[in-house]
Amino acid sequence: MGEASALTTYFNEMYQSDTVRLPYARLEDWTRSMPAELRQMKQAEAESLFRRIGITFAVYGEGGDPDRLIPFDMFPRVFTNAEWTRLERGIKQRARALNAFLLDVYGRGEIVRAGRIPARLVYQNDAYEKAVAGIVPPKGVYSHIVGIDLVRTGPDEFFVLEDNCRTPSGVSYMLENREIMMRMFPELFRENRIEPVDRYPDLLRRTLASVAPPKCNSEPTIVILTPGHFNSAYYEHSFLADLMGVELVEGQDLFVEGEFVWMRTTEGPRKVDVIYRRIDDAYIDPLCFRPDSMLGVPGLMDVYRSGGVSICSAPGAGVADDKAVYTFVPEMIRFYLGEEPILQNVPTWQCAKADDCKYVLENLGELVVKEVHGSGGYGMLVGPKSTAEQIAGFADRIKADPGNYIAQPTLALSTVPTFVEQGIAPRHVDLRPYCLVGERIELVPGGLTRVALKEGSLVVNSSQGGGVKDTWVLAE
Image (cartoon, rainbow, N blue to C red; front, side, top):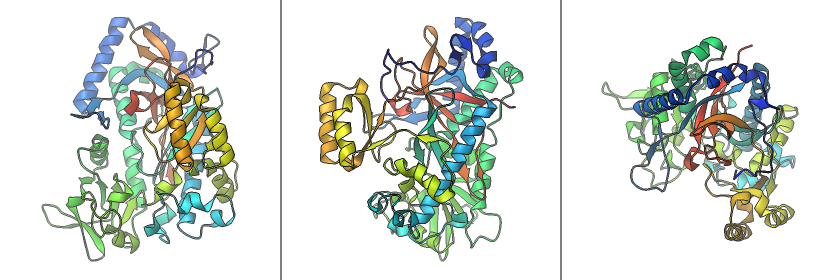
């Protein structure tokens, strides 16, 4: 997403025609009664808490120490209970369809046989792992934590920007944003009935335990597998391990012997049943994927295939969140569930199609173009904020490999009041709720709201200078 045009009107989630919308009614007095000095003091306190807790993120390619503080905005984003109920239904529907798709394409491939999605998009996809074809994971679940990125353009208009079916990050910010807001403004939580989010670690642990492998006949031992402290999301890995009361391990802490995976402990080896992995498919087993990987566990995939361990999310889940496959999710919902989509996709042009590619190349200055496998705001062109030279360069990249790109219109993302140097101003936001899929499908009310802190910017990614907000869902 790029720079906002001065001519575009944006839905302000707090104000409509100078009238405060109901969900924000009790926040207007709070902001009016907060003098600038107090606001600055509270902002400094929030930053101090974030730094003390250690909530940082890494920006790749900057050299030196990549850890920096993620900007936190104290002005919460608020949803009514009715708004959330609709979003929750749509998110659960999408998570069900994405998992049905994964189970299908690693099995009989009925959706491909029915001509509903091109075979090349699935079987020639870099994220399609032939090594897991034919495997039915416990409860038939491939993607156990689905992060669905949503944007809003009007009172009732929500769109899914993308699906994250592998290892979506950011949930630690959702939990810490709430913790810090409750600590700094307890009166707000007394005056507003806000649904809690602190059940997330318990729900995550319950989800992981519910997909224990067939050979587990006791209380499952769960671990989080991290690439290590150099990873940009390492804080989150250790944070979730602490909250769930499970071990945080690296590849060298695990080994395969016989039919099982074992963890090295001071009291001797301990069998591991469920691995919540936060490393990419390519690195999880050097005997199956990249032979040069030092992060994984040799022989892990053999144990997985034989039902000796569960890997969450399952290897191969990434084929469902490919940006070209994304365009077919509404079709998946119709095909597998026999339902109409509750949440809509953003209109998308696939450059692999000659007509779409022609349209995109003729209108590059007005579109957002993304690499099919890109993430974090990298590898994309935001037409309205790009120079003629940048547009021409990107056009050459598309012509050289059209199948690697999709394009979308520049959406008029909604705004939420945000504390800035001059006081309060509207800034553009998106939302990532975290849907847990195991024996049941659950999500806590809320998610991670990311905010574009730069005036006029539509880029909310933390890697591109965005910040975060607490997300409230009002109780009925």
